[in-house]
Image 1 (cartoon, helix red, strand yellow):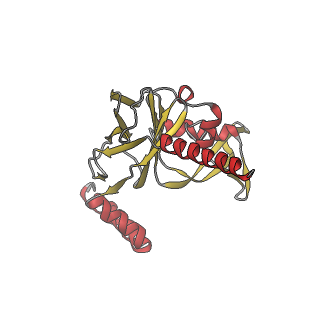
Image 2 (image 1 turned 135 degrees about the vertical axis):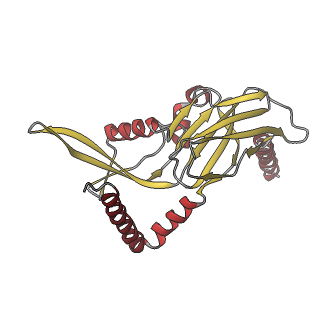
Image 3 (image 1 turned 180 degrees about the horizontal axis):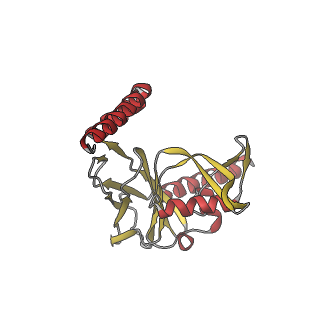
Length: 259
């Protein structure tokens, strides 16, 4: 007879957990990009992709307000090296270096307001939201793992100057309480590869929905032919490049020769 109250409490707990799960999934994100493939040609000067999105509550769920959107855009991974210059015998030389293995070639955080106003410090660190909180592992001398902050700051500064790393607290605009838009700026020298767009929906500091929106950056035409030749036939490509340089020099000496 004593087992019945315990069973009833268990059923109540399960019902409460189920209700919380339904409530957590009360909204869902629907997103779309203006273009899912960016083609790089000889006259490519950069472009802006437009991310559109909407917030759809489940049937019968009440509509809330005060939503926040954070979109994280990450490009293909690559290894980068930063150097620190020091003056030796009156000459500036590269004295120290750090390698950043497999970090995003492109990284952007777009939100409708500052990230620190959306979620707390612990959540930013756990979700790696923002350039300050995103993990950029370092390697010194090819083996040991380090966390040297000056090199990390230098890497982020250089990539921001190139337009490849960015953090915009006004990068997302709500057109209505449930429709939003964001611009993804791609510079002229954006790396080719697959890009991942991770869109997160927050309400009252808690993440309640998430959806991906990937796109591709690829070279087209002559650029694609040259890139494929250099990648797949490196030796022949190098010999052909040297041959073209020699032929160009010989032709120039004939044309501009003074008799």
